[in-house]
Length: 257
Image (cartoon, rainbow, N blue to C red; front, side, top):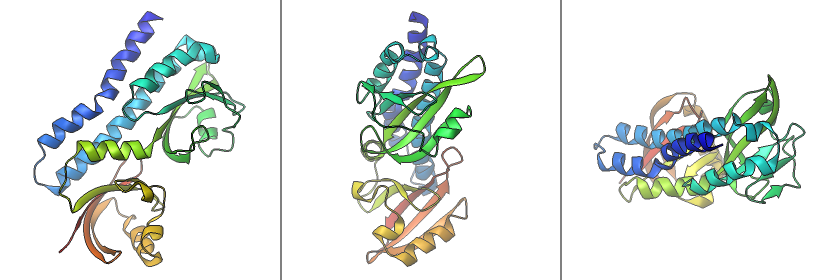
């Protein structure tokens, strides 16, 4: 048990150093928009990929393999408390029932209807799926991995990361001019990250107009580029880049005078 905890602690240090890396990178940023955008994208990828690495470690433990909540809970509680984004950890069984650190025990909800659940039960990782959390009601990004014992999936370890807190962390740790900001979209133009929390999980059309949504859909056929548009009467210029890790599109936008 002590060896497992030592291994998890070492990974936790790597994940919880998100803020320190952000401070370091933002302090040394060159005045190059592409470098700034890549740094922003990299911080998000590093944070979520680090969480995935840690849940993979937890999934390999005998505690997780036991499929008993009381055994695996201490590992999940510790990880949840140490994450900068205050995420909810959960432990799901093949029938879709699950336990969470938010409730402290079994949930009265079920995960079988989640689009990502069959993927987990097929032995695959989940990274970047967007949901309204059944445990908390928060807008969240899912990071999860299966627990495999003797070649069979017996459970899954997952994390529901609150996108509002992830957006806030980025906002505080990466410095931009007042008229510039970051945001991220999924392939359906749903807003994943944004400094304006009211926009998160809305589509571009919801915050602009239908024609703007169609324009964004068109440019998202590219992996990167420059995009000028008008939003609520303000002329904006942006650069964007697709994440091969998350399949999201990261934007750096600035108002044009």
